[in-house]
Length: 165
Image 1: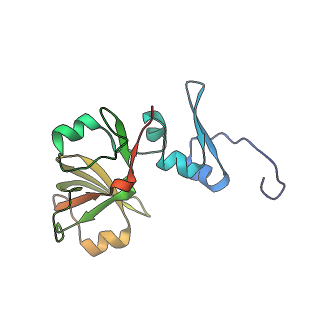
Image 2: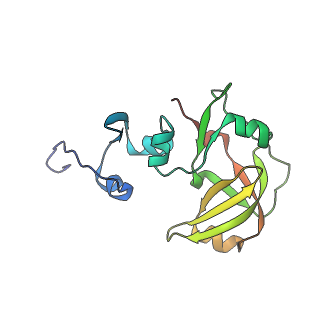
């Protein structure tokens, strides 16, 4: 379609396929258009929980969960009152040591499951906040991680996205 300068509509539930051929995407829910945007924005800045889940984000939280469980995570300013937000798994940083000064967005978790997904490792982490992290094979090998290890998860505030709907 790019060579011929044609607009086409391609329907797919396969994200890899969509990313390989599309300039933009649209998400439908029960026949209603929920969000249209670039694929990068659909992935990293979904409008609501449905789009976030469709774009394979498993780390979806409400601000009330954070207030009661993990007081040391600082939410973005646009998350005042009650809100829902996401943290993409690839934006969770894993370290075996807490680092120098204690950081407000770092907390200890236990690795409860590890799955080799080819181009990344999927870590299921349990602690004050249960969270999924994706790390590269190089990071995985460098850290020598195994199930039941206690590690530190760091969430970067710039990667916390507040859902608008």
